[in-house]
Length: 86
Image (cartoon, rainbow, N blue to C red):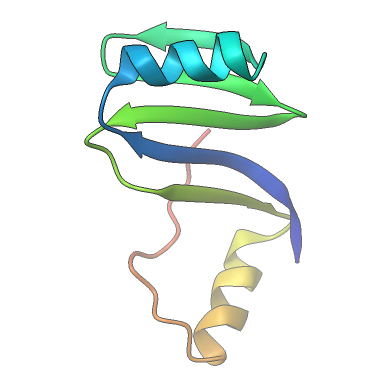
């Protein structure tokens, strides 16, 4: 059902310090940076940093409607229904 982890966003208290740590200390390739968000490529997984954000994990599935229905039937608490996005 789950093909791969596609994107993870971590909340940070200081974006500039966090970007510097991930880029300069850990050596992770930064792929984009804006005033309130930065992204990195970690082995093909998009890794984002967001000040005062929330932890988010995006999973790529082969059939989102089927995965949604299966998880719902298993009693998983659904926060929001799937929506079509690019």
